[in-house]
Image (cartoon, rainbow, N blue to C red; front, side, top):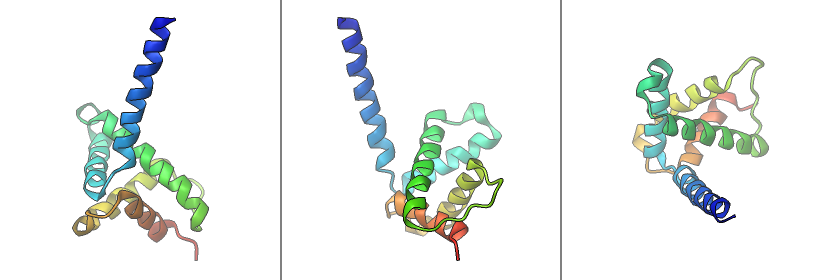
Length: 117
């Protein structure tokens, strides 16, 4: 029982740290993660897989949230990688505005690319 409790406590502490890291992305950290995701596309063994997974999860969560408050029209056949590429390109283009919170940058990227008329 003691061993199980220790594992549960360690897991909850680790999960909390990960949530804090990825929940509070600013634009600079988002760009760093986006570039790591881009690197992963060509050289998966050289990329930080934790950062890549965090980026994909973060963008996916913001996508799910944004779909509820702004009309996003995704064409059939659009993949998660397509969406990640759109966000990556937008963040790279907005490199002068990286002091903003990452959530706003992701939502803007999605709106400009997939916003319904």
